[in-house]
Image (cartoon, rainbow over all chains, first blue to last red; front, side, top):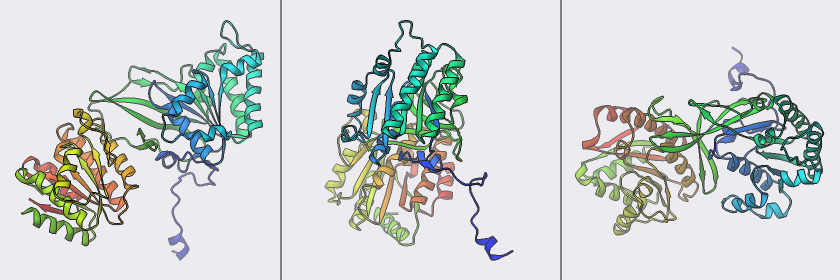
Length: 270
Length: 185
């Protein structure tokens, strides 16, 4: 065997090829799970049950990006941005100068809707409304130079779309232009657990269009609730598929592998 | 084996370049022994993380202060205080809500490791038996395996403290298999 053959390191990525540029989350443990970070321009469905830490994770993703000089944007659909801002003050990793400097931008979807004149009494968008909303998202990303975006939640937006075809079309169009702008996006999906099986979305459409699916949930272990995280799918990178424990620490979220707990004893999803 | 001999063996094990030791003490002098051992290591200018599963960290801090130990570079992962409604405001301690949250121990060690100033470091796990109250043997063995290998990767000298009278053959064998040294009773 030639000497070169011996010294050439074995690639750990079974797919070989050239790795895509990564958007580093700077969240303890998550970049390791994702083999260096999220592929730039990916649309990730961050799916999880109530209290599983979706908003915290998404917010830390934005804050860490902003601290590293990126322009980041959070679109709040389910609660007023003022309430979100006051909640942010409770995080040790938050720095309000990021908002003042325009590195972290927080928008209210209801305000965007008002300005576009698309708020309907029956709560359902027309095709024209959908176009106007997509246009507004595109303007925000383009004009501010946003490289990290979070929509919290896409489920609440989907409730305003008339059917599954519209949902698929909306997310597909959204992902097309965000990818073109190199904007890495987290769409937060509210899910439920039915008969110990957790879905990725309410409508069953979002996960098919997204480039990645990260599943968050609660595990009951002997009566205690633990938060878990698992990367189910991520186009453009090798990644772990193991379930991890996620915890909020004084310096932000941190992730460690979840013990198997003897395969089944005393653990269940909620 | 006296506590002084145990301490000497631990120092020898550190100097030998070991990273993981199982340290067994009898129930009658267990608490006194762990305090003495920590005091000796701190006196040798090692920085440390003390994981407590059997007594609140505030209690251990008091005992270490009484023993005139240097606490400048000692931190705690406390699995007791929150469970029993004790004090949880010591800046040196990170508190875990429930002893079933075993993964949190690893995570908090990682966080505290960043605070350690000393180049030579130790982790004292007091005690493996304390966890067995809440976790089944197979779970405990899984955790010990993960803990031991995590510490090995970090190259921090780690002592898994065991109470002789409470440690069965099966657990002893698992600990011996993982450890570079087995010290004490």
